[in-house]
Length: 537
Image (cartoon, rainbow, N blue to C red):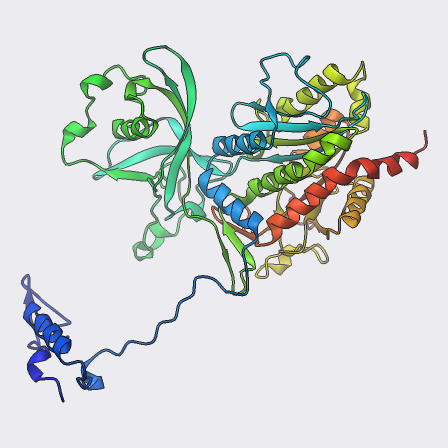
């Protein structure tokens, strides 16, 4: 049986007027609603109908889909890191997350504002924070004796971002509402253009009834901003160079059809931030926090990529994710401390420490940065409380610091940028960072120390040094080791596309980082015993 010709649409004339314009695709068959209804009725009542001729209908290819390769399972640490990055997009959220994880593991929070004299005990686990964006956690071994050292891993948890300006309100441009934002540490580069950008950070609010002032974290659960590129059809104007002040201003809305939406409502008159920021933005923030607009005193807000990280590659070898630098090392270090803390609290004779700093990407000079003294101050207070008169100089001399920051994995498209034999690969192991000009702290003694830890814990180390015709980056290692006078090494998890809005590392590199850092906390004290035994007194 063949389908009646009435079921098929008739081809329209060679040209059809559409809104007084000639439709160039007028030869395409047009299916009217009556045509479609007739076809549905016919096929519904004739299940054995002969298919129409191939020239008269579209043949669908068989579609086979599968979410992930069945031969691979995402490593639990990798998935946990992906979730951590997605749910904690700013430095403030990251610090809060780690504080919560430490608390769940039995660590006790101690404020910098109070005395620590009667709060610390041997075998205890503690942490403190500063500015809501840096953190130091430590485990005091039950056998701790004054003068014994500390095994430390230091990382940073800030990342390249775009920060909302103190006065972010911008003049309307052809119906667009824009947001005044400034690059932090080289952000808002071309990799930031045409991305779905979210908004989050911390907001200072005042309770209208009690007058209490507190800080709340905010993470808008949807993209709110975009920096649009100019289409290449515009020629030279689309090729740059681009002005970072005028060409990278994010758009956040279209102007409302009702101009009254931009006016202050009666309950918003006198709001501290009114006039400095778009009132519609303030309303969104206030609604998200569940407070009136007048309660908003100030905020530190930033833009970030909202796309969630994922594993990728034919065999799921890669991890594609935003904000890898340096939250991946921080995540691995904290998990290494958590995995080792229970046994160390009972058997350890020194102090195991993890330090997470803000502002590394801009020089670490602020109070929440590595040069702010949070790590040194925390150790000093431990020694003052439990050290029986030991000096900090003796403590530091017996200490060892791992400065953990991401390092460059080899990029197969730019082999000429790397030095032979110094090409870290993904999913192999943590990379030791070297530099002859003091940008890294690695030397022969500290490298031998960490290599012994790696041998004991079955970890593979890789090595990186920049070419003579390139410049090296920096870490918190030199500033901390010079401040304390302790031994130190620089190392980190390798990654591609450092400082891009979205980077790449290996899907097994998170777990490899956890394993090495846990091994350091478990073995450094014993390794140091043998090092000390070989020193000339």
